[in-house]
Length: 477
Image (cartoon, rainbow, N blue to C red; front, side, top):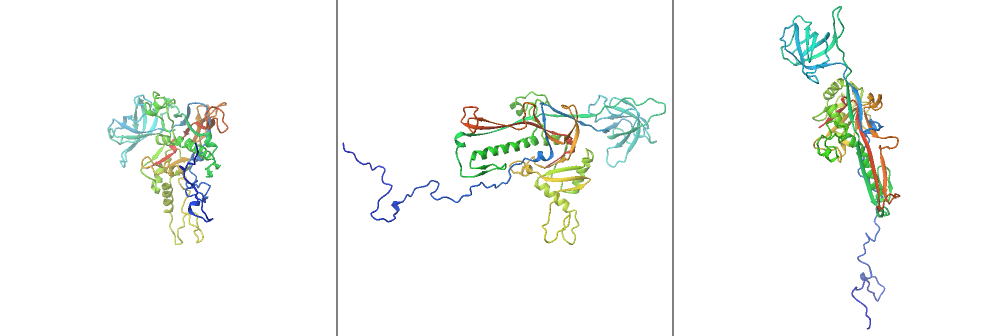
């Protein structure tokens, strides 16, 4: 049987009798991206700048190892005692034998008040502007009550059942009498925290690792080249670094029986147990043991006077750093600028001469009013993908005392100098869990399994310790 030429596929080119360019002599549907090389910017443009929000903990704290599930430390209690809710059953004018009841003791009915017979006390009415007060000597103690004899001839100044404050200021004994009855033990507060395990992972197939891209990648930690998986791996690492910090800031203990406690396998842990889920982060510690400013940003000197008055009642730390968002930063700048007289030569506050050739600096880095306050922008509070632009539960700033404090370390068994804010990570002679990273799979140099991929694993186990939280201030919306 004779063969024949198939015409099903048709012609791609039609010959011409003459050597002239015609449309049918050219390829019209060629498109390998484009037959013309585009003018490209090979390097990726960093339109968001440095996207990492980490750095706060490195500025204010330190990292040190721990080899236990339990981190405990002791903080000093008050040296002196004052009760602010005391009432007398006696009427006004009684000069001796007035019995006072302490209503704000920690354990009512146990008789653990710090007032002893022979001590002298100052008693003042809690009612504003009443002007009523007494000084008295304690004659006897019984449970949560104490009996006094007044120094004033007019006797008791307040009426019966009026809430008063009682302050111990000394003692006085008659000649030839026995000494003080009873002693007082040092008042310590024991705090604890537990580390949490933080993990992340990046995976890429072996085939994708062998593919070259046309975009030159770049990341904040200096990665470069045309291998796209390198960019993804470095960004995973940067993201993990950020989470190591933000987890220490935001962590909270899981309530007993909560969904998180159940999901993490400890639903029946007793309240406050170190075996429970979660950990105590910076914000949680300051909210529960520190000072809280709510209702907006302190934008006037009167607001800072209230803050200073509160600090006077706490540790009176001389230098403090306020980590602020942008609105809080501008509010401090405006407050300080408003203190200037605005002389005839123009704005002249601070150390600026403001001559015609100098740009006007409208920002401040700190000020002194009773204490030294320094301010620093905190990117975490401004970043719109993190704490920035929150409608509810927003934080405007955090005031951290500078320096370190002495605490009794239960693990070391001695007093130790510690920064007010520091991170403890799990470590021993054989296992360091500060920042672990390892590669698994069969690509990228790994030979641990038959998986045709490279998996990069990250792990850390850590907790933050907030020492002297009563010296911290959290500023919330």
